[in-house]
Length: 294
Ligand SMILES: [Zn+2]
Ligand SMILES: [Zn+2]
Image (cartoon, rainbow, N blue to C red; front, side, top):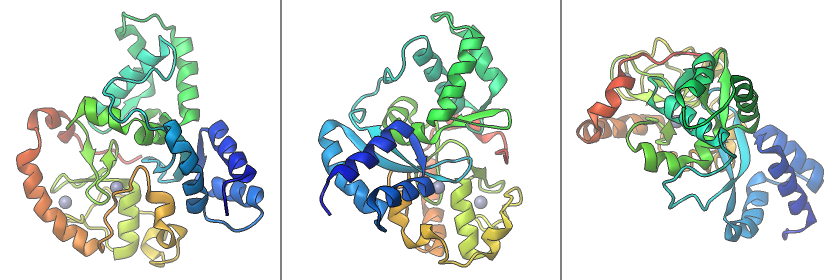
């Protein structure tokens, strides 16, 4: 199938919606194309047109809900180390300050109260708390930030779109998921070896292995509250396993394809390499606190 009005319509829908759940995107694609067509093929055809314009349709997984999303992101950010002017000031400066707070926090979250109080610490901008609150709600909706039970986390859109900026700016001051090797802001930490894993990666790992042990040191991950369905799930029952490229490109496109056993063996070696590479000064603060289960 060639690029036509249907692709254009789907792109319009994605751009208007901002971030779209994988299941919703699939349902809308079904409506527009009136046939079963994979999001992967729609995406690749649209991206052929978008990429020369500095845009890309990418997929990403929310660290908090584990749900997969699709979004149109700018790609011109790649060589840039500056914070992009996504919004007008004072909001843009405020958002940048929130990102810094989240990234320098111990477990990738800031309480919503602290988030609002942050405006008092930004003398260079004038932003009323009432306006800051309105802006925060907008950021949750757009997927730049994620709110859950009184805490603000990195949103899936930021994780996918702003990754080059985060890597250039904060360098070693964030974690890498032990399993998918992608950037990680909030996850489950092993109390024994202190490796950190995305909740959704650990859920998938547990559903394959049927044990709740750390993939690195094999100690039980006691604090990890595995959903019962993960322990009982059939290994190949989910769409995610059938079509991993549909959901893993983008934020976790470098996910290892090895079996979990292999991942565990490999990571034991990497653990030693990382021990000499990591910068203890930067990580010290975040290492000290046990990851909170939300
Ligand atoms: Zn992961
Ligand atoms: Zn461990």
